[in-house]
Amino acid sequence: MGDTVRVRYAPSPTGYQHIGGVRTALYNYFFAKSNGGKFILRVEDTDRERFAPDYQQDIFDSLAFLGVVPDEGPGFGGECGPYIQSERVSIYREYAENLVKAGKAYYCFCTSERLEQLKKQQEQSKSSSQGYDRKCSALSPDEAAARIAAGESHVIRLRIPTEGSTSFDDEILGRITRKNKDITPDPIILKSDGFPTYHLANVIDDHLMGITHIMRAQEWLPSVPLHIMLYDAFGWQPPKFCHLPMVMGKDGQKLSKRHGSTSLRQFISEGYLKESIINYVTLVGWAYDGEREVFSKQELEKVFDMSKIHPSPAVFDYKKLDWFNGMYIREKSDAELVDLLRPHFNEQGLVVGDDGIARIIPLVKERLKKLSDAPAMVRFLFENVTYHDKKDFAAKGDGLDVAIHYLKQALPLFENAKTDDDIDAIEERLQEISKADGVKANSVFMPLRTAITASPVSPPLFASIRLLGVDKAVSRIKAAITFLES
Ligand code: GLU
Image (cartoon, helix red, strand yellow):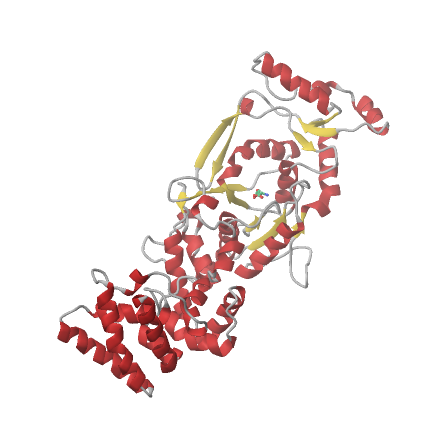
């Protein structure tokens, strides 16, 4: 590759980081790394009405969680980046004024009442002309200067062609052509509060920051013709455009709350590891060779290749993310898992200390999909249990009498047990009993499982009983028999 690759992630702090945004950040970051280029973070916070400090902080927290660090920027907490557009307003204003001087843009003094009126008229007359009627485009520079000096509120509008069409080559989608008449004339580029519109600030910054590839969500595709007109007005060469496939739910609709978690912070609070998020989210719309799917961040920094991004919409598969998460959980050492699980135990009010967490790890490690699942799986070990439904005690096809019968068989075995070895021997003994009686193992073990854990689904039963202790096991079996006979 000739010129050094320079890309940016340019989120607006108008909501918590969506998993689609996370993917955009990762693609930019991996593309920069795999090409020996630079990754820049730019906060596009010019929409002051939708801005919230929490959302801005969430951008920084999200990238810190992912370990995605900008390569340059104005310096922040001892590190590079981010650029913040609201701190650069004077730059945009100057460039917009230069466009006015060059006759490519003009000051507009039309009041919002006039524009409302105009809109109504256009609707009523069903006129084909839509949008601003260019009234102020005819003002002389002197007249405009006088009105500004008199303190009249104004915006700057870009003169755009209404005839012809605008074309560009998207690196992912190919050649795209749009009719110029589909862009409402003449768009505002600098607002009356002196803030730039998204379009102006975005184009100026991509140019000033030397961005070579604009890699962003496809929802921005409709903005490209206008951006190209802005690049033309400034006399600049646009960067390459690379619009990423949409992220959809299984039903083919844009991924939203209806499908499940959508913001990174939700995924984190459910206990998805950064390894799984980075690995799986990168696969939503990108594939390495159609075979290999497991990649570390370091590997993706080497192998990520833009030509392997699919142009068509990509489906976010929550089950597949669970699979990755389970796999990465099992790669963690027990000591790492104590640290990772601690916040989830605290959050769910099961405060058992690091020792407690360490003891349950062997029980849950093989079956965890999300870290947040762990406390509920082992709560029965630390707290008293209550039974809810008698049916939970009977294996499929068995009556309650069978459950009671086998609990009564198990009870004396536990009453006589002293050591862990004795507990293991009980498991064998119960197996023998089920064989001798010609019943399935579950007929014997299901009542015991529910008696001990208060649930028909649990971590391995005998390992659980060893942690619980034989005395508690005995009292739970007795309590279960009482419950079933009541
Ligand atoms: N600021 C836009 C957003 O919040 C991104 C625009 C771009 O990447 O060009 O999604």
